[in-house]
Each structure stands twice: as C-alpha cells, then as structure tokens.
Length: 227
Image (cartoon, rainbow, N blue to C red; front, side, top):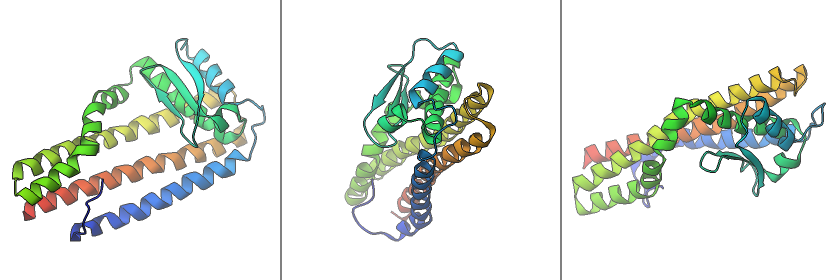
C-alpha cells in the first residue's frame, strides 16, 4: 500500500518499479512465447502434474483447474495443485513447466522443506502487515505518535521477511521441477531449455516484489528517523 502523498523517499522506489515492470513484461512475453510451442509428447499440464505426483509417492494431493491467467498455485491447506485453465488443459512447454513447478511445491510440502514451512507459519503476520503497516505508520506520523510508527515498521518487516523466505521456496520449486521433467523424460532435451526460461522469468517477479518490499522498509526507517 503506497502513501497517499508524495515524499522525497519515494524516489527510492523508482529502480524497483522499473525492475518490476520489466519482470512482468518478461514473464508475460516468455509465457506467451512458449504457450504457442507444444511439447513433443503432447501431454497436458494436468497429466504432467498427476504423473509427477504419483512418481514422488504423493497420493493425497489433487489437481484441479482454477480461473484466471497465471493463477496457478499449490494450496497446502487443502493439498491441491491448482492450474489455470490454459495450463490445466494445454500441452505447451509453458503449461508443463508451470504444472511441474506447482508439483515442486507439493513435493516441498511432502518432504517437510523448512523454508516452505516457515513461509506458511508467518503468513498470518504477513497478511496483517500487508494491510495494517502503512495505515498505522501514517497515523503515527499525523498524530506524532512514535509507537504507532514503530508498530507499522515491525509489521512491515514481517512482510519483508515473507518475501525473503519466498525467494528460496520459489527457486527450489523451479529446480525440483526441472529435475523432475528431466529424470522422468517428460520433455526432450531441446525442450528443457524452454521450460527453464519460463520458470526463470516467473522467478524474476518474486525478486522484483522482494526489492520493492525492501525499499519500502528503507523508506519507513528514513521517515521514522526524520520524525
């Protein structure tokens, strides 16, 4: 949530905004490119996900479609891999790469991957900080109440920690996906590079979100120091 007024520290966000815009463009263009390239074996995202789950001995996770573009995710609470309709039904390199990535999260959950567990444990604090940190900080500035500003900073620090923890979780899921696709022969050798480009482009959006969160935290600290 941005401040509702301009302050000089917002200049700090310009590099992150440029980076985030580039990352979003890259993931969109890369996905669209490989969405048009079908896999040699013609398997769908659904089939790829189901097969990889089975190969890893995961029998309690379901795969289902979900509305929205690039809305794919793994829900550890309901133990479901949810794939956007295009990736669920499609047999493109992009669909298979995304499906394998989400199965990578299911594998993390299955084996007790610690960063994933940590991310889930701090999610409630992150949700609170996402909507309460800036309002509390701004209210503290207007009321000249340092305690409210400090609470806002602490809450937003939780958001930053969440983003930092998310990075290894997402990169690990992508690495697991590529290993699974190679070891199970689901993509031929020249297709693996395309899948890797899709996953790397997606990972950049998480890097951009982390950079934005870090710089916003720096802004809060600077403004707190100037108060």
